[in-house]
Length: 220
Image 1 (cartoon, rainbow, N blue to C red):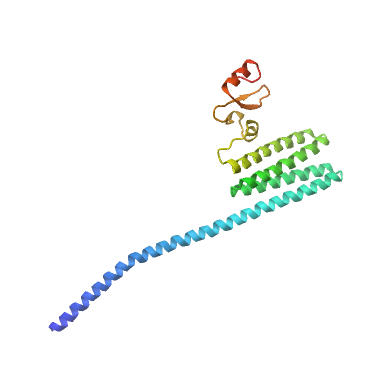
Image 2 (cartoon, rainbow, N blue to C red):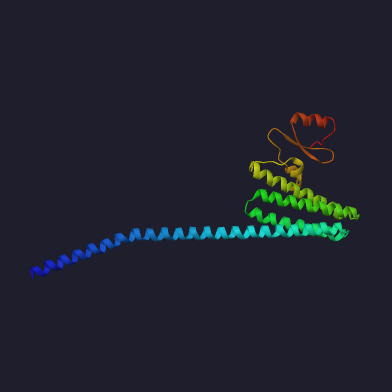
């Protein structure tokens, strides 16, 4: 009987040790599972991000190519004397370039944003000149305005690409990008001023006083 008890006691102790060891093993196993899940999510997010980037770039290039096609067609139409259709095609080209720039903006590709807005500006200017020749001055003025606006966008994005987020456009270009010209930002030490034609400028305080005295700029 004593031997049976000793064997049973020994069996119970071994079983307890085995159970304890299994519980200790569960802790690192849970850590491994957690880390594995985190790594899987990271890999999935990276692959998804890469695919999303590729799709966005493809769409940007697609609209850029459509813009070029419209622009080439517009030039051919103009050379054949079909000016109204040529102006319409230049408008379409500009809109495709705008769309391309909007996709590049999602990629924070400021150089390409600047390039495409520059192409849009050129296309709008071409349309403006044709409308002017056709004595359609309303559309001519609208297209000249759009040309100046997207030229400002182009300069701004190229400036950001070259000089960083602190880059400031000259005041007259900032005016095209703001709903209120009084929101124009000047460099340190300069003050915003408007001449009698409402054209903005950033000048020294001493210069501003002299210009006010001479009646060359407005008093806020």
